[in-house]
Length: 51
Image (tube, rainbow, N blue to C red; front, side, top):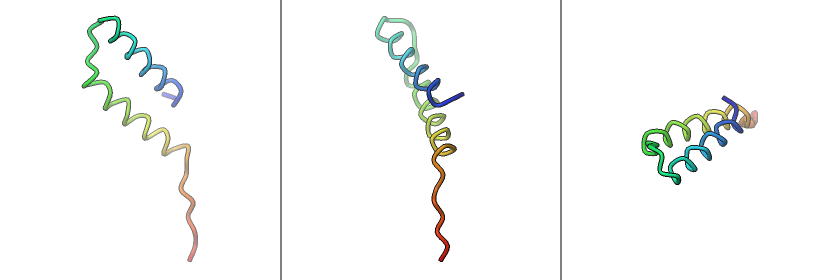
């Protein structure tokens, strides 16, 4: 799942919850946060300096 797609999924789930559809935000939000964190880490490498 790409970072942009995860953001889109989050937005759609928030809209579904606002419309009153049965969305378990407490279950889904931590999973999406974890995925977004992993994807961010893969695309933003740490700079290693040699001493």
